[in-house]
Image 1 (tube, rainbow, N blue to C red):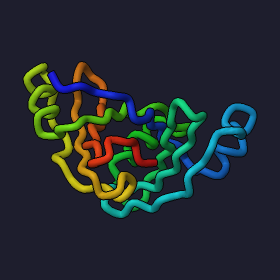
Image 2 (cartoon, one colour; image 1 turned 120 degrees about the horizontal axis):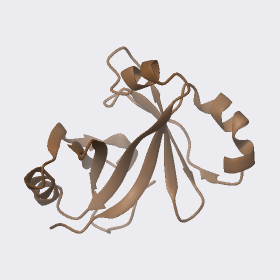
Image 3 (cartoon, helix red, strand yellow; image 1 turned 90 degrees about the vertical axis):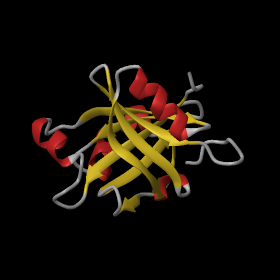
Length: 141
């Protein structure tokens, strides 16, 4: 099986600024990367890190946003996926499908990760984002 490494944990929130204000006692000292309006994925993204772990905050933009229905069901937001880095995206997806996973979003380049390809798989009831590592094999955030 392909070697996986955790890249980030993603949370859907109703709005990034108010969420950060309400959770400043927890996330106030975390390093933050600027907000990305990701039109391809129809989400607004903001990454926070304590230096070891990264959290991605997601807000839907547009009516077809894949996280819009999650926020409708969970108005305060919540954890939505775990993202994993892999060296060989296609091989990793084949391994996940062979393990019983269902490919829910085919590989596409993503602006949040320097145009590296990402895909989404549903495995054991959990949504997993799989991110192809770059040539330097470092996480881009």
